[in-house]
Image 1 (cartoon, rainbow, N blue to C red):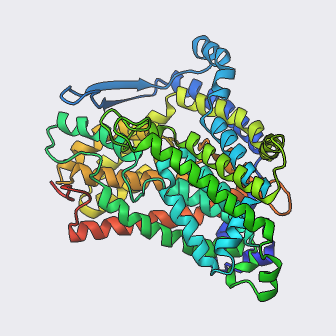
Image 2: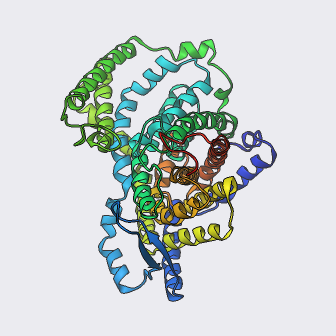
Length: 526
């Protein structure tokens, strides 16, 4: 928790606003209790709206190219009825165990703990980054985080955990690293230097909708690639600025203003056994790379898809989490043996167990979070919100740049309630692709505007399944060992969310004014 004096350094109305958000947010109940309350509210709201006959109708995209879209009517479901409630009770344990972040964070923390507890993280970071300008370290973390969506959701959690360990190793406040890594990884989810699964997933929805509506324009997975390459760098700079200008000051990171002094450098200098451990870690890394090359390079290799490629989807991209775990294992064990911190095979599970100890609080909160998200999605309230919002925007009768910006804001708002990018696009694509084609917007432009709104508010969505994850990491890395409240979390994330929304909105305005291509063969207008 930042002290009041440090918080006031932000100054102005924005600093006061962030302080207010933190104070109000921290007065909310414990996240466990909050998710229980939200689940009860959802139950009551589903009964009220279902009794009132609330429903929406929209065009569902065809399952295959060439098929016609279907008109679908969705009504709010009363979750208190026998049928839905019986299913909820029968699937109680299943919904908790299947909660996506649960297995992800448990697996990842086993590997991260091995790197951290053997001493590798501290030694490696001090070896490579010690004495560098703090902003450069932040920039590197932000860049890696933004590109981490190649690992899907795992990327944001990975960079948050790495960020905490990295900043702690440099003598900075580890909370700054956690916040930076998570914000970059989760709210920069749409940008990448490479074609990622998101590109294939969204274009797979865009293509059949555009063809069914008679829109003749490119809809391949690379239609937003040029825009996203540039966004990778603009978001990296934006993340670095917000971290050093706001987050570091708010969290009282006194090391954010300059290099380590000479005494500090001597204090953090590597010992001979640590140097030896790094050499062994390099050996473990090279062995890991050799195995990966054997499994990837030959024709028909284990990690290639049936077409012989790796992107946009293949066993390689599907196995990212397992690959990361084995990478941690090879490097961590190599370092531990070389540095003498692993003296027997018993030390490996012992170090891993320490990683699980730090996330017990997350596991507890994950139960009501998983059940609430299940109930909210099952009620169909999410679909009603999305369709009603789309109808409102259509009624405003805008065009050109104002229309694109209003669409971005609408998606950013809807994203607070439906965090799944594909679920929203399945609902919105049949509405907005034909609507925007009337004003000559290409499918590529409509899709990229959607992606901007979809990514900007990910980190402040109260329905994000990863809130328990980030709260657990913030508490785990808190130097004061105090539990971090949801108000503190939201107050730290709002500057990033606003910055990403502004940066990407300005970028799309520039693209539209200069009529730049969004991807290979994909222009702004039809």
